[in-house]
Image (cartoon, rainbow over all chains, first blue to last red; front, side):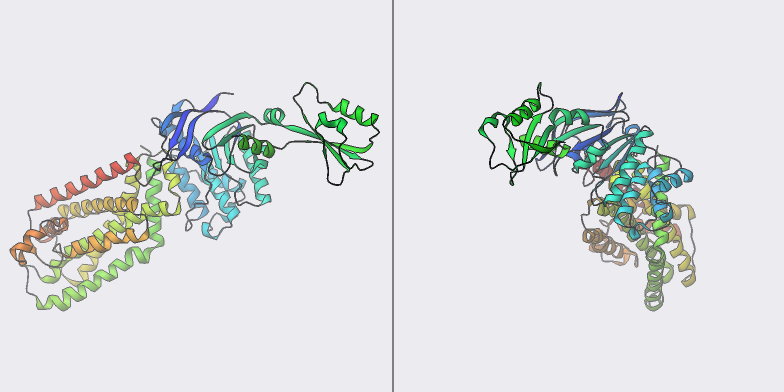
Length: 307
Length: 253
């Protein structure tokens, strides 16, 4: 897929001296869902704000569809929609007015049919004449999305879209994002809800202390860094792991009924066959077994800790 | 030029006026009427004519200027400060719109409101005193130029202010005193020579004087000087706004 956003040697140092971004290099591919993961204060919002023109970069360049975001800002910004983390809305305006306002601000002629379509797709149409201050938090979040979509952007930034959102709305939002991707919109979302990235992203970037630690396809990342665990449910509990099994680094559950073997899925040999054979030879029987893959969250935590 | 963006900002701001009609239009009209009652009728009946103009009619340009200046500043400052306060400024900063277009939208709306308000106050004055406008073109020129200039000043204040208190300080503690001391209710020629000289440092003197000249052909300073001073102030405001956008002062990190 062609690159739609190219970030080169991007750094941002605030007047206070705080370095929010340190020499970030990243390419976003057209039509993908890219999840930017990182703990609070890692630089996710600064990176998005810089691409959108809200924050000035200290060093480096960003191009959108081959155009520089500083020198060719009209064309690049017209392609981008932004849903910020905070629910910043015009409390006294109606839903319809604020969405129409956003469309005009981005240089598009009024299009009531499109605004109607967007509001309907976000289940907001029934509230179109309501003042935003009367809406619930979830509805306000939808209004923010409607505003960002009002000028038909090719790229959509979602900054912590699930912050303060209930499970139902979160799932609705995931469906909306997938729907947008299907229409060719490139989606970049920041989150510290790993579940969100795991559910939706094609690729994942991990940022910590302003540095981009890793960029990888989600599936590949989980395969590369993901550990698998084999849990054996024993017929008879053990008081301890026999010393003959030291090489397997087995863990025993507190009640002694479960033996846990952690292995590398990428290794030449997993050691499972040998383990099961030796357990059999030693007369240790099990009634059931199960395997579990590391979640993206566990991978993320281990990456951030390493740094 | 992003015309749709300018129109969006302009209509957005104008619709805010419609929502706050009491505060935006009716309140200044009521307070101006009270000025006429107090200054024009009660005090004015005891003051003889000034330069051949009845006192009630003499204060009309000053009263219009008073409302024009305070309303231009407060409308424009609130217009840009409120998105900063609520955080919706993110949308303006991330939109494909130039600083000039932002200024045209916000300042244009604030100036339009002031011009409408000035016209309403003039019409209200017609109920109290006989009005004559010797130079309608120049009257309109001063009305428009002053509205734009002080809306630009308001825009600067709206970006500079980091709280509602600061937003109120300039109109209350600077604009209003300068207007009262700028010959709105008297001719500066009535002052002792020293205070006449001091008054010439007050920019409002030039606005009121020029505006009054367009009505009655009487002025404290030459009309050319009035126009030039208004122009200088306008250019100064534009230069400050240009600097603010260039450096991102209180707008961008």
